[in-house]
Image (tube, rainbow, N blue to C red; front, side):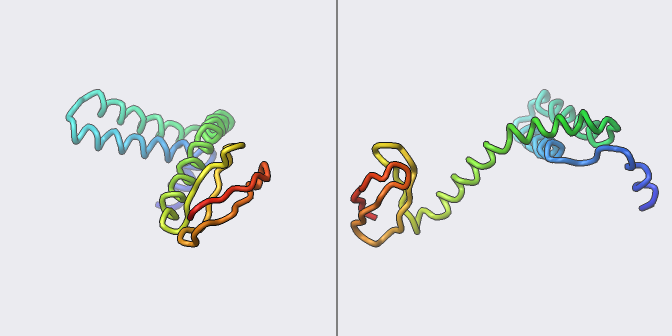
Length: 131
């Protein structure tokens, strides 16, 4: 069985970042359908899953790679913003976040220290902050 699957997938594109995103999207739509019972949502779920299978079994490697590159260029900034926001939420008990009034650079200071003199790394403005 292992050799059959190996031989079948040889020369085909297989899974990638866009494929995983489409599978997750399909799963989310299926859950939404289970909650609402709205049939077009289920149809979109099936379509996105079918597109995923088509991409994985495709032999046009150049085109699939170009699609994945476009997706990554779109998704990477979104992912980084989500990752940063999650880090802020995770560290909110340890650090206090604020913006420099002149250049709007985000800075963080440890909590519980009292009044601090902070120098902005971008514009070198000196601020007094309470942590």
